[in-house]
Image 1 (cartoon, one colour):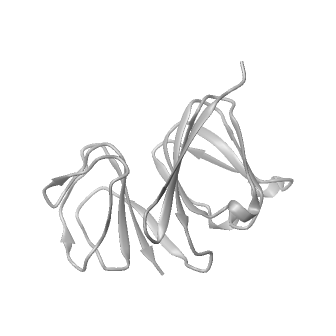
Image 2 (image 1 turned 90 degrees about the vertical axis):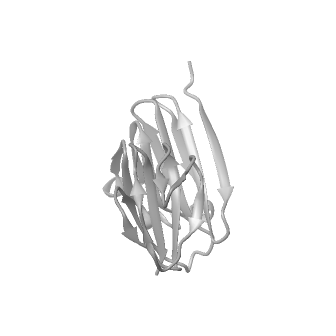
Length: 158
């Protein structure tokens, strides 16, 4: 049987989030002009991403981590899953706008150039329970975090 996947895209003001869930053995290509993913957040599964026809660019990605994939901007890419997977992408809407990204697991101080995104689970941040794909523009203040086995990212405009 041919492996299958489902895709999702959500525009969020000055960035977008894409998501892909699929079967083991799924092959996904992305054209250079459409490649705007800066970070990929792997919720589950594993696979390999590479620039098309460039064996030196191969990179294995696997569960519950964030990967900086800026080196793939502007290139045709291919991804092959090794096992069933669920991956999110944090994408820039402006190819000239760079972002830093990281996953959080504890309280932190935000700033008005940062965006918080819940990718998985139900963390509680400043007393509010988040759902997957909730996001917020942060302020210059302390954010109290109860991570609750969730995956949450903070992305800051450089």
